[in-house]
Image (cartoon, rainbow, N blue to C red; front, side):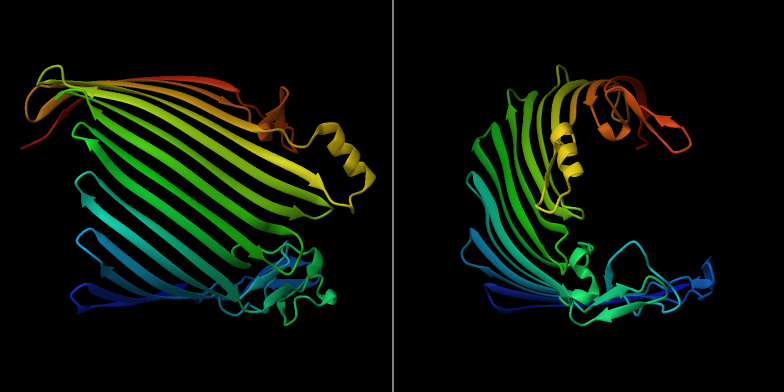
Length: 384
């Protein structure tokens, strides 16, 4: 049984002609009243189920100022507090180093926006957020958890612990730029770019430490005539994770994805519309593995012999063609033809022709190259 309570309020004001203010407050509580009863037994120890209550309080203050008819700026501050409730003492947790009852996160964001004037509009925004929390709750290797006032105390065992990124202290910095540009009546461009960095701080020396994200995209539309339009798009993104694992292993994950699309839509006659698009996707995941000075000889020899985990590559080509014939204002026929070619060499399900094998002998294999074709003919009628 879970009883939920939600309350929210907002207040807006305009103390000056060019200044507008907004305040928001949101309260959400999930009160877990599930009966506590024996759930598991290990030897002579009886474990009960665990209640999972949650209380979230989020507040936001926003100020926006109209500098001129073209430019508008805004500044906001946000605070979110999460309380996960007291741990059920008769329950247990395993497989993790520690939990946290409360986390608090504050965010400051600034944005400058230019509205469409003549041929261009756009916006730029930056934000920084910080998250911290209450004392860590260490697993007792049995019933309940114990609060740790000093996480740097060597007796806690946190030095080799791994802490969940969703609970660890974190600083996040992001920036975003977007623009709409129409250099000519027949040509329009949309540009976007954003970047972000996360830095995690936890008592142990292992686990996730840094992440990064960068994205760039450009979309264009060009009207050849009043009946024919050409579209195109180009995108690139990169995501990184930097983490250290126990037993001297260091893992860096790097994913780069790029995409290209071309399309055309036209109306040869007032009743017929045809179009098509070609899209290409290239995605590569790289696992860079290294060892620190405490690595044993066997680990060093294994990494030297294998070179670490191979890359995972995903490539896809997709061709879409369609045609529409309008019989009347209410009815039409449509024909769609798709053809897709995919290359995927995920070694998790097979490597060098050897399929993945479960403990019971069941195997799972996949085709590295796959082709799919799709043909559909549809009729639609809309009642007036």
